[in-house]
Amino acid sequence: MNATAPSRWRRTMNLAALAALGLLALAGCMASADVVTYDLPAQSARYSFEAETNGVKTVWEYTSDRPTTPDASTSQPCIADILVKEPGPCRPEPLIFLRYDLGLDLDNTARADGLHLITVTGYYQERLSTPPTVIELRVEASFDGGKTWQPAITQAGGQNTFTAQIKHPKRDEAPGGAGLRITATDSAGNTVTQTIPKAYQLR
Image (cartoon, rainbow, N blue to C red; front, side, top):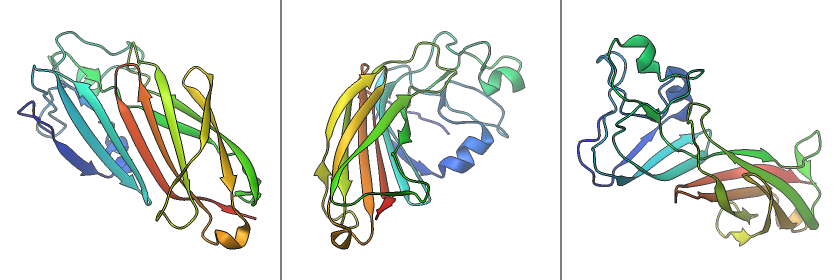
Protein backbone atom coordinates (compact mmCIF):
# COMPACT_ATOMS: atom_id res chain seq x y z
CA MET A 1 0.00 0.00 0.00
CA ASN A 2 1.57 3.25 -1.11
CA ALA A 3 0.77 6.83 -0.13
CA THR A 4 2.55 8.98 -2.68
CA ALA A 5 1.13 12.39 -1.78
CA PRO A 6 0.36 14.14 1.50
CA SER A 7 -3.25 14.70 0.46
CA ARG A 8 -6.07 12.94 2.28
CA TRP A 9 -6.71 9.36 1.17
CA ARG A 10 -9.28 6.76 2.05
CA ARG A 11 -9.01 3.00 1.90
CA THR A 12 -11.50 0.31 2.87
CA MET A 13 -10.49 -3.27 3.57
CA ASN A 14 -11.46 -6.23 5.66
CA LEU A 15 -9.92 -5.80 9.10
CA ALA A 16 -9.80 -9.52 9.80
CA ALA A 17 -7.89 -10.25 6.61
CA LEU A 18 -5.50 -7.40 7.33
CA ALA A 19 -4.82 -8.60 10.85
CA ALA A 20 -4.25 -12.12 9.58
CA LEU A 21 -1.49 -10.82 7.37
CA GLY A 22 0.06 -9.07 10.35
CA LEU A 23 0.31 -5.82 8.42
CA LEU A 24 -2.05 -3.56 10.32
CA ALA A 25 -1.06 0.08 9.89
CA LEU A 26 2.71 0.06 9.84
CA ALA A 27 4.17 3.30 8.50
CA GLY A 28 7.41 3.42 6.59
CA CYS A 29 8.01 -0.33 6.35
CA MET A 30 9.74 -1.17 3.10
CA ALA A 31 9.43 -4.84 2.21
CA SER A 32 9.47 -6.94 -0.92
CA ALA A 33 6.57 -6.85 -3.37
CA ASP A 34 5.35 -10.14 -1.91
CA VAL A 35 4.94 -8.62 1.56
CA VAL A 36 4.04 -4.93 1.82
CA THR A 37 5.15 -1.42 0.91
CA TYR A 38 3.70 1.35 3.02
CA ASP A 39 5.82 4.45 2.48
CA LEU A 40 4.27 7.71 3.67
CA PRO A 41 5.27 11.18 2.45
CA ALA A 42 7.75 13.07 4.61
CA GLN A 43 5.22 15.84 5.25
CA SER A 44 2.79 15.37 8.11
CA ALA A 45 -0.75 14.83 6.81
CA ARG A 46 -4.18 13.72 7.94
CA TYR A 47 -5.23 10.20 6.94
CA SER A 48 -8.42 8.18 7.09
CA PHE A 49 -8.58 4.40 7.38
CA GLU A 50 -11.82 2.41 7.19
CA ALA A 51 -12.68 -1.20 7.98
CA GLU A 52 -15.93 -3.14 8.12
CA THR A 53 -16.30 -6.61 9.62
CA ASN A 54 -19.60 -8.42 10.17
CA GLY A 55 -21.52 -5.17 9.80
CA VAL A 56 -19.38 -3.27 12.34
CA LYS A 57 -17.86 -0.20 10.68
CA THR A 58 -14.75 1.49 12.06
CA VAL A 59 -13.28 4.76 10.78
CA TRP A 60 -9.92 6.05 12.01
CA GLU A 61 -8.71 9.62 11.45
CA TYR A 62 -5.08 10.25 12.37
CA THR A 63 -2.01 12.34 11.62
CA SER A 64 1.15 10.66 10.38
CA ASP A 65 4.31 11.12 8.33
CA ARG A 66 7.31 9.12 7.19
CA PRO A 67 9.29 7.91 10.23
CA THR A 68 12.92 8.99 10.39
CA THR A 69 13.84 6.71 13.29
CA PRO A 70 12.42 3.31 14.27
CA ASP A 71 9.58 3.46 16.79
CA ALA A 72 8.59 -0.08 17.72
CA SER A 73 9.29 -2.00 20.91
CA THR A 74 11.91 -4.75 20.79
CA SER A 75 9.34 -7.26 22.04
CA GLN A 76 6.95 -6.38 19.17
CA PRO A 77 9.14 -5.46 16.16
CA CYS A 78 7.78 -4.41 12.77
CA ILE A 79 7.27 -7.33 10.42
CA ALA A 80 9.74 -5.84 7.92
CA ASP A 81 12.47 -5.92 10.59
CA ILE A 82 12.14 -9.70 10.56
CA LEU A 83 11.68 -10.34 6.84
CA VAL A 84 13.88 -7.68 5.22
CA LYS A 85 17.62 -7.15 5.68
CA GLU A 86 17.47 -3.33 5.59
CA PRO A 87 13.81 -2.30 5.95
CA GLY A 88 14.36 1.32 6.95
CA PRO A 89 12.66 3.13 9.87
CA CYS A 90 9.32 1.61 10.82
CA ARG A 91 6.56 2.30 13.34
CA PRO A 92 2.92 1.38 13.97
CA GLU A 93 0.26 3.97 13.20
CA PRO A 94 -1.46 5.57 16.23
CA LEU A 95 -4.84 3.93 15.69
CA ILE A 96 -7.24 3.91 18.65
CA PHE A 97 -8.92 0.55 19.28
CA LEU A 98 -11.95 0.07 21.53
CA ARG A 99 -12.70 -2.59 24.13
CA TYR A 100 -16.22 -2.95 25.54
CA ASP A 101 -17.84 -4.17 28.73
CA LEU A 102 -21.53 -3.92 27.86
CA GLY A 103 -22.76 -5.24 31.20
CA LEU A 104 -24.95 -7.90 29.58
CA ASP A 105 -26.48 -11.05 31.03
CA LEU A 106 -25.35 -14.49 29.86
CA ASP A 107 -27.86 -14.36 27.00
CA ASN A 108 -26.33 -11.07 25.74
CA THR A 109 -29.36 -9.01 26.73
CA ALA A 110 -29.92 -5.96 28.93
CA ARG A 111 -32.98 -4.86 30.85
CA ALA A 112 -35.38 -2.58 28.96
CA ASP A 113 -37.07 0.57 30.27
CA GLY A 114 -34.28 1.96 32.45
CA LEU A 115 -30.70 3.19 32.66
CA HIS A 116 -27.91 0.83 31.60
CA LEU A 117 -24.19 1.27 32.29
CA ILE A 118 -21.46 0.28 29.82
CA THR A 119 -17.66 0.69 29.98
CA VAL A 120 -15.45 1.52 27.00
CA THR A 121 -11.64 1.42 27.04
CA GLY A 122 -9.38 2.80 24.33
CA TYR A 123 -6.05 1.14 23.60
CA TYR A 124 -3.27 1.04 21.00
CA GLN A 125 -1.07 -1.53 19.30
CA GLU A 126 1.54 -2.83 21.74
CA ARG A 127 4.27 -2.06 19.21
CA LEU A 128 3.64 1.69 19.63
CA SER A 129 6.30 2.74 22.15
CA THR A 130 4.70 6.02 23.32
CA PRO A 131 0.95 5.95 22.65
CA PRO A 132 -1.20 9.06 23.19
CA THR A 133 -3.95 9.21 25.81
CA VAL A 134 -7.67 8.99 25.05
CA ILE A 135 -9.13 12.22 26.41
CA GLU A 136 -12.71 12.21 25.15
CA LEU A 137 -15.35 9.60 24.42
CA ARG A 138 -18.81 10.09 22.94
CA VAL A 139 -21.43 7.35 23.09
CA GLU A 140 -24.67 7.30 21.09
CA ALA A 141 -27.38 4.65 21.09
CA SER A 142 -29.99 3.78 18.48
CA PHE A 143 -33.14 1.74 19.01
CA ASP A 144 -34.59 2.04 15.50
CA GLY A 145 -31.92 0.40 13.37
CA GLY A 146 -29.69 3.46 13.09
CA LYS A 147 -32.31 5.92 11.85
CA THR A 148 -31.84 8.14 14.91
CA TRP A 149 -29.12 8.31 17.57
CA GLN A 150 -29.43 9.43 21.18
CA PRO A 151 -26.38 10.72 23.11
CA ALA A 152 -25.49 9.01 26.37
CA ILE A 153 -23.98 10.60 29.47
CA THR A 154 -20.29 9.65 29.67
CA GLN A 155 -17.75 9.97 32.46
CA ALA A 156 -14.00 9.30 32.62
CA GLY A 157 -13.27 6.29 34.83
CA GLY A 158 -9.51 5.76 34.60
CA GLN A 159 -6.73 5.79 32.02
CA ASN A 160 -8.33 5.60 28.56
CA THR A 161 -11.51 4.23 30.21
CA PHE A 162 -14.98 5.77 30.22
CA THR A 163 -18.43 4.78 31.43
CA ALA A 164 -21.69 5.69 29.73
CA GLN A 165 -25.29 5.65 30.93
CA ILE A 166 -27.71 4.59 28.21
CA LYS A 167 -31.45 5.12 28.64
CA HIS A 168 -33.29 2.05 27.35
CA PRO A 169 -36.84 2.30 26.02
CA LYS A 170 -39.48 -0.34 26.64
CA ARG A 171 -38.83 -3.63 24.89
CA ASP A 172 -41.71 -3.27 22.42
CA GLU A 173 -40.32 0.12 21.38
CA ALA A 174 -36.99 -1.43 20.34
CA PRO A 175 -37.71 -4.88 18.86
CA GLY A 176 -34.38 -4.82 17.00
CA GLY A 177 -32.37 -4.15 20.15
CA ALA A 178 -29.72 -1.49 20.72
CA GLY A 179 -27.11 -0.16 18.32
CA LEU A 180 -24.05 1.78 19.47
CA ARG A 181 -21.89 4.46 17.89
CA ILE A 182 -18.72 5.29 19.81
CA THR A 183 -16.30 8.13 19.00
CA ALA A 184 -12.99 8.48 20.85
CA THR A 185 -10.41 11.28 20.59
CA ASP A 186 -6.87 11.20 21.95
CA SER A 187 -4.35 13.83 23.05
CA ALA A 188 -2.75 13.89 19.58
CA GLY A 189 -6.06 14.66 17.85
CA ASN A 190 -6.49 11.14 16.44
CA THR A 191 -10.04 9.79 16.40
CA VAL A 192 -11.94 6.57 15.89
CA THR A 193 -15.66 6.11 15.28
CA GLN A 194 -17.09 2.62 15.57
CA THR A 195 -20.68 1.83 14.65
CA ILE A 196 -22.24 -1.41 15.90
CA PRO A 197 -25.70 -1.69 14.31
CA LYS A 198 -26.85 -4.52 16.63
CA ALA A 199 -24.90 -4.42 19.88
CA TYR A 200 -27.41 -6.29 22.07
CA GLN A 201 -31.09 -7.10 22.60
CA LEU A 202 -33.42 -5.78 25.28
CA ARG A 203 -35.46 -8.05 27.53
